[in-house]
Amino acid sequence: MVVSRSKAPIRPATMFDVAAEAYVSQSTVSQVLRGTGRIHEDTAKRVREAVNELGYVYDPLAAKRRRKSSNVIGVVINDMSNPFFAEVMIGLEPPLTDAGHIMLMTHTGEDLARQEMALLMLREQHAAGIVLCPALGTPASLTATVKSWGIPMVVMVRSLGAGSYDFAGSDHAQGVQLATEHLIAQGHRRIGFLGGQPSPMLEERLRGYQAALDHAHIAFNETLIFTANPTRDGGHEAMKALLTVHPPVKAAVCYNDLAACGALSALKERELHAGTDFALMGYDNVLPVAHTILPLSTVDVCPRELGEHTASILLARIDDPNCTARRFLTSPRLVLRRSSGL
Image (cartoon, rainbow, N blue to C red; front, side, top):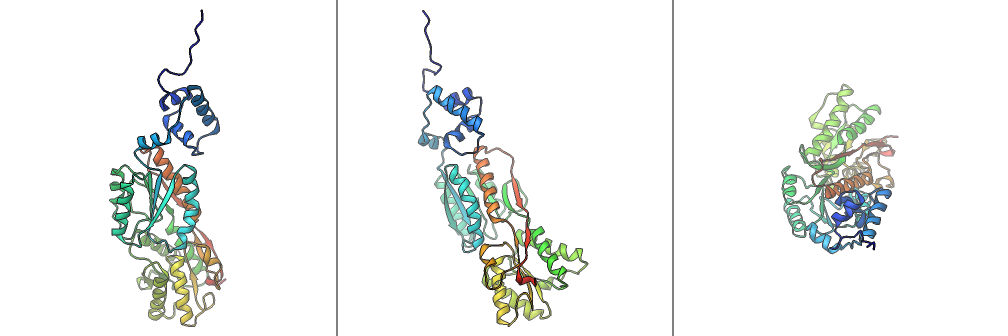
């Protein structure tokens, strides 16, 4: 007599059994069962067949307990009033949602204490991951602190300097160099720089500004640099200061589009017209500046693409906490409109 035996083990099948049957890792099985959509279809089909054959039952609540984390991704932003971040979110949210996560956003307003509180709350909630655009003055040691909590984190937009951590941003030196070179090509030899507080990001932008001057054999003049909060008010005050200290100057590059919008209002107060009396460049290419009364020339840093890559890096870190640190930079490009003299 031939006795048939089922291939399924007597004990309940585990994810390890499914992985062995399908010749894949347990991480791959987990991704297929969670429906992340990032596994090749042939592999996913093999995993599903193994699940059916072994009678494995996936329990998402048990999986959550094993991971000792929730499905929450904390997104901690320094300035939610900046429309740049709305466009970043359009790229960031869909991949995270498709992977079974939900986003909780919080706004620090450049307040280090609020940032610390937000991060500690995410730790208490066992967040699956964190996306952080750090407040001004954030210590570089923060990345090591969050890593010690066992929570994956990607630093976004603002670098925290050298170190082994995941980062997604843009090549700001290249972007500001492009903007400054455009103004030089328009015939300007004295060019102001408006906005930004002392930080690695400001230093990076100023490297691009100085590189453009150096290539054109124009001496760098520190008195043409007017730092201020990277906001409309900051840009407004910086432009007023430039026009007071250096009345002959007829061109400037701004730290971001918000500062540029403030600079435009300062020009209007002096009855100067951007594009004819004064050439002005913004930075970021947020959507509203294309449709203002005077469309703003700017540098596009591709915020949606930046958001997409931030999500990709974070999901990779969640799946493999020990993977090599990743760094992604978008490639800026000029977007020329009326404010720079076209």
